[in-house]
Length: 176
Image (cartoon, rainbow, N blue to C red; front, side, top):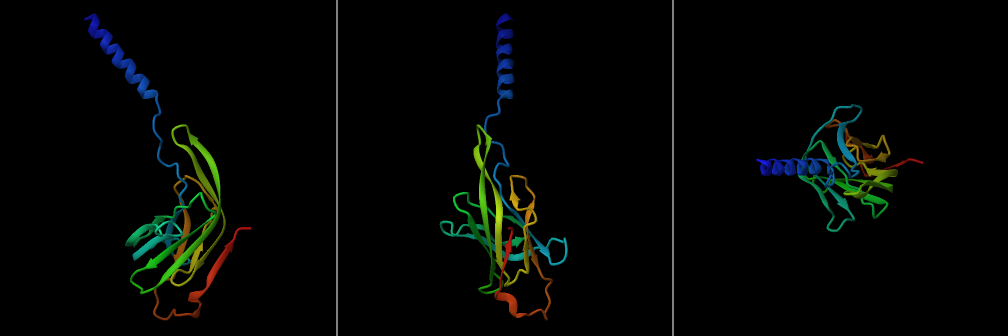
């Protein structure tokens, strides 16, 4: 009986010690801009069918979202550079793409002993083409590991009479 009590005590002590340990890295340590699609002039989110999203300049031009119906997605920024460009490829519309370019400063921060260092990003400037999309808004220029919509992409409501000549314009948004 005494031997059984010792074994149970050791198991209990081991469980308590392991329960206090915080091994491993917790989720939510990466700062990823969370993008969402909206109808122009509205807070109503929309979905776009057959949309592919990829990053330019990464090896092999990294595919972020394969052709799918999307209303939200993430746009990963690279700490090794100060600029990233993302292509929104409307696969239903032959050779029609929009590009969003984001210029930023990476700010390293210590997460924990297990996780090490990660980065927050301060957006300094952004621009976009307007082939299909109408506007991009980044209301909070500080991108942290808080999962919130930080990039709002606006599209006009489909209309057969909205054919204007400004489709090749690039719009710059300076934050200075």
